[in-house]
Length: 158
Image 1 (spheres, rainbow, N blue to C red):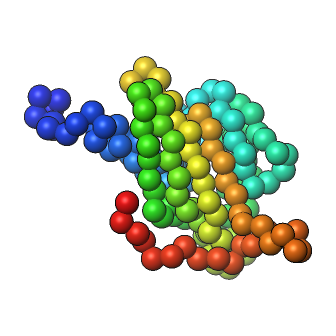
Image 2 (spheres, helix red, strand yellow):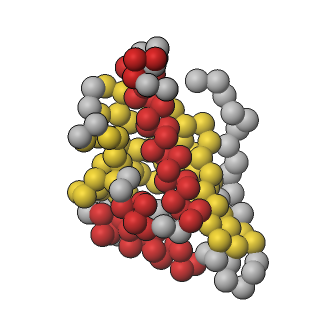
């Protein structure tokens, strides 16, 4: 569809582009393609991931996290559920549930666990890039342990 034939509002186009970028993340993870992932993040991405330390600053640190995951899994399946975005000009934020699962080098399958993910996006030179992501699990306050066996509720309409 050419721009002249695109009857979507600017907000609808941004939403579609943002969803497309997250779709590219899913594809790149499935292909274990670090270079494809590099093109989806800002150089100064700040990531609050589930593994220590508290923050991972810069694209090298973010790609290092994914490289470690790729060594852990023989095959990678990344799922996103209930993705929603709010867009304001050149910035957007989104949130979803995500699950990283796959096959281990031993051949055993693992279902992984659902986590909560938040994306901070910036539009740079006409492209939406991930400038911040935050992955978390709920905390059982009484034990101090993360709760990793929860399932998202059935999908809700936005």
